Length: 242
Image 1: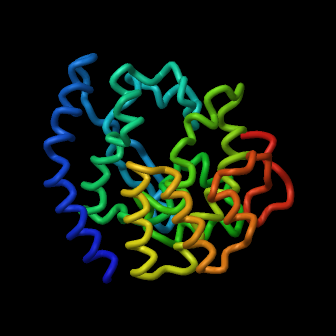
Image 2: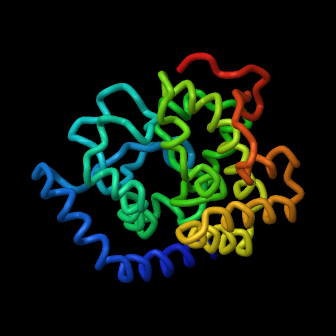
Image 3: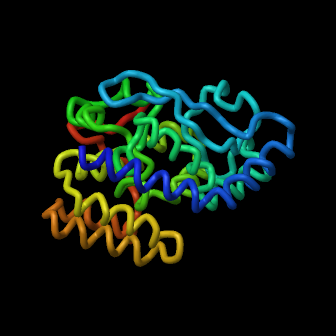
């Protein structure tokens, strides 16, 4: 209950504060092709159901019908305005409405498409016991996901080999060890990442150290090591197909 109260109070305040940014961004997205500035994305909710997640549209119309779920920074489906809103994370702001509605929380595992959650291991399925969030430790560490996937011939396989294993492990931290302190730490680090990614990554590493997370996970959080294909949590083999 405490998280729900915090979500509503903080999300409502953030909507008011960001309205002068969100409204011009909506107009810019609409102006480029005169289609809706919003993208309604079906995502898996807490418990495995489906909810409609709101995003500021950054891609061409019907981009989701291409069959590719992971997006590299040089994805041709991204519009000119879309590159800007994605870089500044403005596309995530409409999700504050989802938070107020109760579909999402400010802090929690990032919501995935059903195709991705169908691949979850038994360990990863614990992610579906929590309300999906706008941000979490994984969102901070892999804010550059598009750059990682930029030159990959198959972004989906690259995602499942290089990013998913660590994102799932990081997301499970809050699911398995929730606390109001960690909730606010994640929000503060998310804000810090806007001005200094290096400081935010250092902060994530310190949080993981205090929570006695595995050393390997702490090292990945610093992003000072090369990402190599790794099995997702609960699996022994690397993902080789979608």
